[in-house]
Length: 449
Image (cartoon, rainbow, N blue to C red; front, side, top):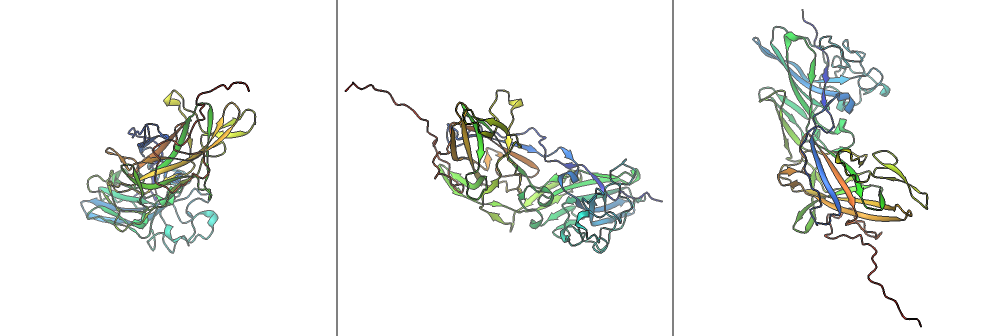
């Protein structure tokens, strides 16, 4: 008699949190000693664990094979494992005999994740308030029926090959080569919603006799891009603003640079991949493939930090009494430096390692004088971020890596106070500052007349 395999895998998924220690630094813009916006990139491996459902993933796919003296047998063939909190999020759990609102011990064989009765005909939920409905085809199992599986003690181990988000088509697995093949349509770039746009993968091997529920640790095939800001303009506070007609906020133009010449370029918005488990099932090797993949020359667009969220603070201007939400000032202690962040998170697909495409970032801001509240609008300050700096990837995004672009706004900027200046589609960065101080060039006294 065999204890039933947990119908779920309790997930310790890779979080979108900084965890590694490697970083790339470009203290100043590559364009001049007087940096328009001092710039740095933090590049961190995404390694700290969090639950998969907390990232908005309510499903994953899995192939499973039991191994031992009798040979090898398939246990699960692209099974859909679904999540339910019992209160509307995820899948209808009414057909699952092993569902429980929270995971218990490793050997209790109950979990909020389950796969029993999640087949095409068996999943009949029509109430959107309860989670996925049967018409949500991309989130429905490729199998006609999914039965509860059990640990087979005649076999020594069971291997699991997993990915998310679940796809009925576009992802395949070959056990002979132990390679998971991902179609380019399964990995696409997008904003904010990692649960639908970001492909993740994992592997695990369990000892059948342990009868323990399976924990799977996922890695990201794509990258993550974030923006943050602080300022060092003596006598002024700084508010990030939007000067574009369509309210598209801060933008980044794909571009290449040769000498002092900039040209618009393209970047990939989708990619295929192969995930190779042959060396180590717990640490598979991902190789991206851009054959036939789509590209675009469209700008990346990020919302400005606004309100009192995203690291902003309130500043009341003297004389006028106007209240502004401003970004943090530069401080002496780097360990306590705070930043304002864009609420937009971009999830790019991995770019080729030999990519030459960098990005010209466009940021506009308002200077507020701390003595009298005078406002000065600086339009379209620009800085170019190359694809690589030495042997370090910066804009040529690589898998399972988070890139945080940090902008220090200074008094030396390529932005302009001319209202006609903004051109957020230009890849070029002016070589010299366009923010000119008011200077008194000598003084004379005339005779009385």
